Length: 218
Length: 315
View 1: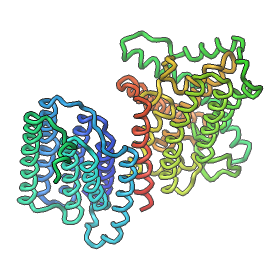
View 2: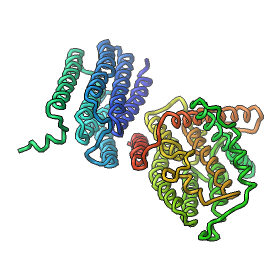
View 3: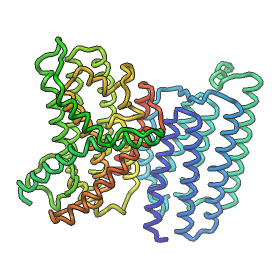
View 4: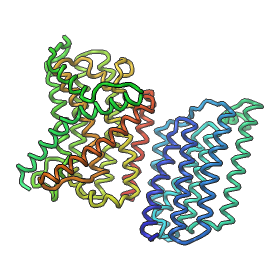
């Protein structure tokens, strides 16, 4: 695969990643957010495969495969299981109004692309605009975590943020070494398990909402 | 290309859009009916409705001003003029000697039609007209800037706002799709649903007063006046579809007037409109109408996508 084609494909995949991120941000229902984050992981895996094909880096193929398996299939399945077990209302209640969230997201994108100019020296030419897109994903993921009440949506935000970190790593170093990448994926899966169990336990023993934990502050 | 030839082409294209507008509505309704396992009315039903309305008399509210009678004609005129600015079959080979108008004028004309419709609804003094007008303007407030942003994001890459030139230049670049094009397309697909007044923003089939947006404004009109407005609605729908096609699928546009070229362009146009109309029908069949207070969130997604497309293009 030629370098220009790879750059263009990664740019287009970056746009798709941004779009799925906006879908997560706009999702009014829990299942939609989960499906959107799964789609995001699929696009991320494809981007990894494109980069692998363009650079001939064998590790990247493995990483792309693990990404699709773990983040696009295993994690969404876990989340959906937890949602089904909890039988919670599927509506997502944002802490701040959605138009404010959208405005902040738009600001984040402009900021990330503005920073891109000064970060030019660290990024790889082949990945095009992957660096600002990765930064945007990280920050909007944090925004989702900060602006939602439900713990499960916050988990979705965390996974989206993690996708952003992966994409940023691709942009600046053509992916992390295989062993680190596998470690990160294991961490994420383990984190998801722990969080899922915690959410279930908290729910079953005290029947509370994340927002109620605020009152525990001394 | 001379000025007269250009105007003749613009008139022919506007005429084509006005003639085919009801057919697209009929097609979407037929598609919906088939998806609901109904036989459905013929695709020609909108034409029959129009001819029936044209034969009816006009009844008018006592509180309406004389201007009320002029509104349907003005709405239709604004929409048809907007249709004349679009490249339906022909794309100009070089910048026009006599510029008729560009994308900004097109969006402004659609906004003018919306404004006149709302004024008419308020003028007649009915309660539902006022509600419909207020809702329609709320939706317009969100759709128009997003539409401008999406069009600008394309215009920036090509360097012109003339829709015909945009389509002509992009035709050569069809395979070189860039990231912003994709985001602008998503934005346009969302805005298209709102602009054509379809589910999830509005329900064209509803006549339940409390949920009407567009239909609420038509309640006070009757007879030939109502026919004008309904025809304008069909035309506006096809104008929106053609705008999306011109910006994102500018394939097969004719340059000259050779019969073979025109036949190819007509086939391409039919194909593009069919794809977009099928999209409208499928979305309408698979989603529920959003609660009105949820609509800004849905359109906000379109607005942010359009903004991102422009930001990606410039930054």
